Amino acid sequence: MEITVDQMYQIENKGHDMGFLKKFMMENAGAASVRRLVDKLGNIESKNIVIFVGLGNNGGDGLVMARHLAGYGAKVTVVLLGTFEKIKTEESNWNWSILEKMTSVKLMTGNSFNFHFTPDVIVDAILGTGISGEIKEPYASAINFINQTDCFKFAVDVPSGLDPQTGETANICTKCDMTVTFHKMKQGIPKRKDLTGELFVEKIGIPPEAEEGIL
Ligand SMILES: NC(=O)C1=CN([C@@H]2O[C@H](COP(=O)(O)OP(=O)(O)OC[C@H]3O[C@@H](n4cnc5c(N)ncnc54)[C@H](O)[C@@H]3O)[C@@H](O)[C@H]2O)[C@H](O)CC1
Ligand SMILES: [K+]
Image 1 (cartoon, helix red, strand yellow):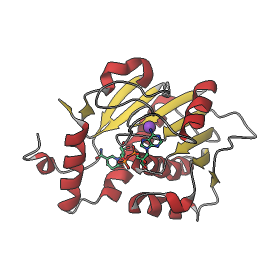
Image 2 (cartoon, rainbow, N blue to C red):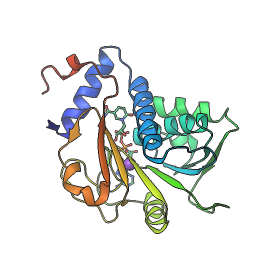
Image 3 (cartoon, rainbow, N blue to C red):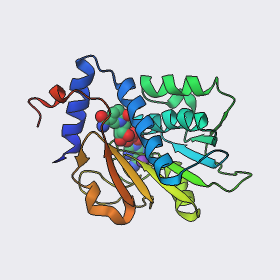
């Protein structure tokens, strides 16, 4: 069954109100994404993985992935597209503050993408269901950088720039090899397999009762 983006937000909020907090949904989203990536790529120990992180909860999922990937021995670099103070949500903030205590993950902020290595994998955690309008800087430059880099590209929830409701793209959009979306498929995503690559839906622990009255 495919659902609308609006239904997804309603279900998420109802689950949160039931006591299954968004920070736990985020944890499950990031963990499920890493499991899919490891299933696909096998041993990721010592692989260079760059995670581009936006300031909303799509970025938060990327921050969770960073912690899990470090646990697999990957060399993880997180590029926060903005400053720490501008992170918009409590749950993303919480995950950023954990990474600040981890020397195994390199944290970068701002809009210079000079890496002293070639990424083996890029994780696109820039924009998800919260996208609206044309892509602004520094997100646009990050999307261009991703599209110009030759490596495996993994989209968290939806390739950034793709509207998960309509399947239409903004002025730019990442082209990915794999996409993992959460809870249930959103209507616009499967229309654009050319951008998503392999597409999976993962449950993130939301009680089915949170759908009552919505679906
Ligand atoms: N489905 C679930 O139950 C869960 C989903 N999770 C993840 O959360 C995101 C949605 O998070 P949200 O904070 O609502 O939105 P985004 O992160 O997609 O982005 C909002 C952020 O981006 C800015 N923005 C919007 N449009 C643009 C633009 N065109 N250019 C530049 N910037 C833009 C906006 O200002 C906001 O700051 C979902 O996709 C999942 O990945 C959760 O983990 C919980 C469970
Ligand atoms: K994304």
